[in-house]
Image (cartoon, rainbow, N blue to C red):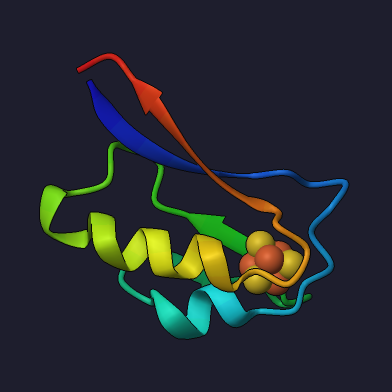
Length: 68
Ligand code: SF4
């Protein structure tokens, strides 16, 4: 199993903190909404992804397990 990032869109309020913390994994569009890495999180970036998830003020960033 691998981990993958996703956004709970109804919750996301475009604060942008996630992209500040993990620019390797998340970029912001012109309106400040995040675009996350589409595939599995590289193992060396999992801790960074977790930090970004915890920093989201509205808990809109999710990490879920996906099959390899
Ligand atoms: S920190 Fe949370 S609310 Fe802000 S852009 Fe990222 S996912 Fe959305």
